[in-house]
Structures are given as C-alpha cells and as structure tokens.
Length: 120
Picture (cartoon, rainbow, N blue to C red):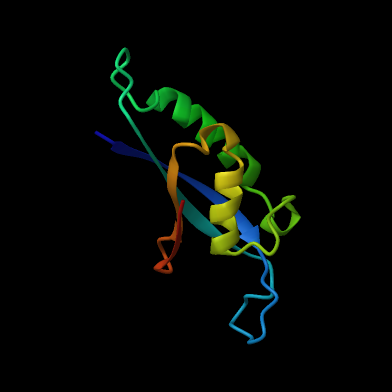
C-alpha cells in the first residue's frame, strides 16, 4: 500500500511583479499571506508505521518557512520572479532529502483565491 501524507505551513512576505499588463499595485512592493502544503507518498515503514515522522517533516518545513517569512521575495536567491509557480519549485528544491517521496507542492493566497500546484 502507498500512503500520502501532507503538512501545511504559512508565511507572510512581500514582492513585486514585472508584468506586461498593469494590475493595480502589482509593480509596487506589496505583501500577502501565503499558504503552502507539501504531500509525500510512500510505503509505511514496518517498524515505525509511518511514511515519515511528521515531527521531522514539520522541522524541515520550518527551515523552508524561515527562508520566506517576512522577506522581500524578490531578494530570495533562487526565487525570481516570485510567482506562485516559482514558489512551488523553490519549496520542492529546498527539500532535496525528501525528493524521492515528494508527490505535490501547493501554494495559495487564501484572500485572493489564487493557487498553484505542481505534481512530481
């Protein structure tokens, strides 16, 4: 049997977007509360009964969160331009030790109803 587990985190960050169309305020520095969810799939370990220790996953996601929370995303190395799509990739690439079991990353802005999901 293959199991899928997920864990969420959120962060507050600012960014700008250089766009072909001018959308109110998008070129100015502005901020959002972002939500992210990471899904892992795998077999249940016969000893622990877990795909991964959720405490370990929580610590790994906290490391990722610290790179993003209360930062100007334009200045985060490896995250340019700071789009939802690139945030998904950034989060995935920040978890190289989990790459084998990484199934999906989703980032969304609840207040705006926007989301992006990447499947592996």
